[in-house]
Image (cartoon, rainbow, N blue to C red; front, top):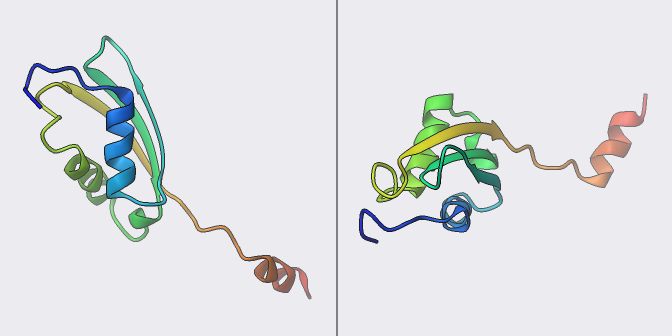
Length: 94
């Protein structure tokens, strides 16, 4: 993609989802079409520092950041796997 080509919210979201399968990703823009904000919740973030979490997202966006994508306001969280039905029942027993 040429440096001056516009990038879309969907492209940003898809790149992150492809790099982090199972992630919940919300992407929006602010201050124009080249400033993005994203909330990424992914199980791959477990045990990683905030910096390491952000590095995983930045790697997914390689080639966009600093080009068509001028800025990214990024928030990350660990996405916990839902408990299995049997796990809940076991926890409720005394």
